[in-house]
Image 1 (tube, rainbow, N blue to C red):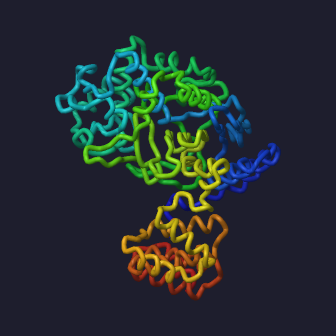
Image 2: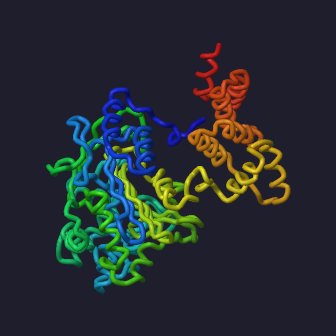
Length: 494
């Protein structure tokens, strides 16, 4: 059965007609453009900006699609996009700038700078606010609405009465309260509102002429419309595949958590300035800010299997090959900095739910070919080794090859989910026969899982082997009577 993030939503006929007409008119200069256009069509993304930095210089700037579907306004270099929680990376820099000025130390407890806090908060350090490991209660509700109807005093009063979620440093838990407090710290120590401090110490020195703080209530020239295919049901995000307008308001006090509007070119200037030590003077400051935080037990914590760590305002991609710093925002925009490769990729979109972080590595792969999914990048060490052995045998006898590997290496193992995900990757690459072998292998590795038979049945149906597909869907339903996908398939085949 496909996972939600594996399901590709097709755009409506009307949108496709409008969108493809404009894309055809754009100059196609390289394979990156073709890749971007394909991703936009698959994910129903109206407008997108791309910036790529290579060896300290902007190597590519490109605009795609529509800033406004309603008014048929195309995306241009001056189109601005909300970057949402990518704002937190700016806050990280602001705090490190104050440390370089000798006004704070990130290891300081917050009570040194904030008086009106509960006793149980007093041991929390500044770096724990930045890394989302503070244990603070969140100042937003289950639907991600700011407590107190946008009133700062009410919000602060309400959140201070809530219990701690955990002891500081015990876990990673994405938290907006910490960034509100960081805003208070910046304002107090700098002598100016945190928005002004960030503008004067980051926007202006970098020449970020289009960048500002704002939200849907502000009238901003050249700002893109916002769209979404998702909605929040309690704490769960649901993607219904339907395109609709999206509006977001961020009270001024909340804008350290999310509040910056920018362009890919401005963000490229900002990254270049940061990496050339124009924003932070000391290499030790950069090293400290970019270091993935460790929990009390020595582990790391992050959003998911990709952005699996968090530094000081900067989500991180912790892996052996091509690690990255990876600010993401609003499920719509992201940038990846690959420190070991002198490469950065920035993707801004106006679609909540586009999650470009999941395809930025593929863009990087046009510069670093090994990073392409088709070459095995992103697979675990064991799965990649199995892939290499299967390639030598044209993907035949997958179970036999697996058994030989596991016999030679008693510690060799794979998870059901990683094998299943690889199968769907192969389908997306047009390698359906290879995918069939992988899904079949998964049924042998995990014979008690309903999901593996569902996936195997799906590929068998795709390849025209209905008889075997029915058998596997029956097995899936037998193992899990609640599998509606299998039930619906079998119902149609009666």
